[in-house]
Amino acid sequence: MLLFPKRPIWLMFLLLALLLVGEMTAKTLPYHTEGPGLPLLKVEIPPRPLNWTEVTQNLYYPKFCRQNHIEGTVKIRVLISPQGMVMKLEIVDSPHYDMSVECKKMKALQFKPALDHLGNPVKTWLTIPVTFYLK
Image (cartoon, rainbow, N blue to C red; front, side, top):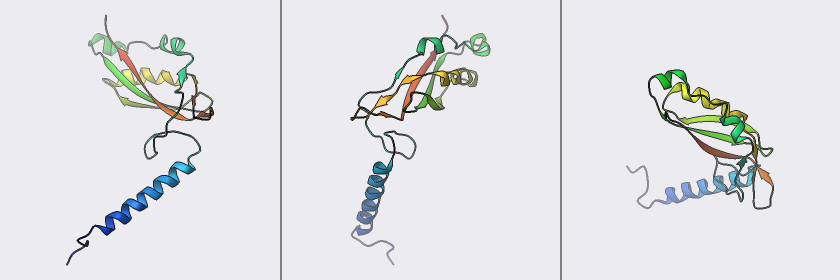
């Protein structure tokens, strides 16, 4: 007994259903954004940090990492609100836990928000690499 017919009609129905769900999701999103489970919608102007220098000057090389010559790049993702504030910060990749903890200070960043094609500020994700290296 065959569970599926020879012709993949079931596959066409599945693809059609996924397409319709994807269209409904894109139409009902209040902001252009991307993230787990959400479609990527293009923004015309990406967000720009306003206080980068002040925040990065408060980052310190973790003592344990310095003593053990641990270097590397911490990748963080921040969700930026339409007002330019960091709503959420996620550590994507890190060479050491102490470096991740230090990078959580990046939540203090403020941005000029991303703009959509109409010039409206929108919520968006941004990936930021923070590199720790010894001289």
